[in-house]
Length: 122
Length: 122
DNA sequence: CAATCGATTAACGTATCGGTTAAATATTTC
DNA sequence: GAAATATTTAACCGATACGTTAATCGATTG
Image 1 (cartoon, protein in one colour):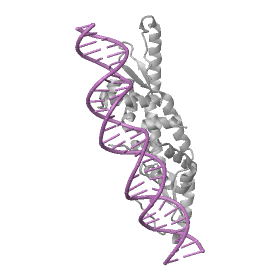
Image 2: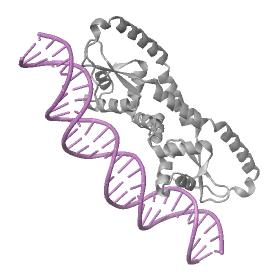
Image 3: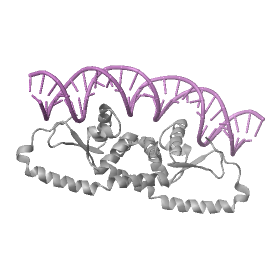
């Protein structure tokens, strides 16, 4: 079961796709303009737009005069959902930080015997 | 220049890593516990933890009694940064939605001549 | 100190990803 | 209606990602 959030994050994982989202955050743009702005070939951009479209992050809109051009704009829902998820996960930090502080103090009190050797893997 | 956000999103793109983050959102856990919880082999989980660690999403903490076990916990910063980014991108939606409404009304008024034929690619 | 344990690294196979060029499709223009 | 334009799809290719099993490493235990 691949959730909507999975698709969203997968779509946003790629740097050029995230750049596209940044650009569309300013204003809607034509597919070609996006390709140019990011120095990408039209086919390459087209495929990126497809995954953004399938994830629902972006939607295609017809140009009023010229039916050849496709204008892309952001869709709010996926990013809102992403935001909610981040908020949910973050919700517990207050507790965790407090718990950690307690633990830190406790181990500070016991540090005479506790300190052995920490491994620093690379 | 791969930004911190790139690393974060890349780390969160994988479904099992996102599940790990969900679990660590509840409470810190041992590497082995995470592997079991997600029915993954220890090596596989270890590698996922490595990318989360490198992205700074997660940090390793030594167990007090048994130095073999490694406890993982969430780090706030990356998700906060992600949250900020989402907010920035979303900031323009008020404007865009309004602009769209204006455009929709305008095109509704002109619909007598404008409606040609929309393409529905699959 | 030998056996076990928790976790990571190494080596390897397969699948997916992202770019490229070439072809296709629809639309506009002259 | 032939040439040009905007974009997508198809076919191909090298790189990267993820899982598996085997080996390694440090720590613990009997």
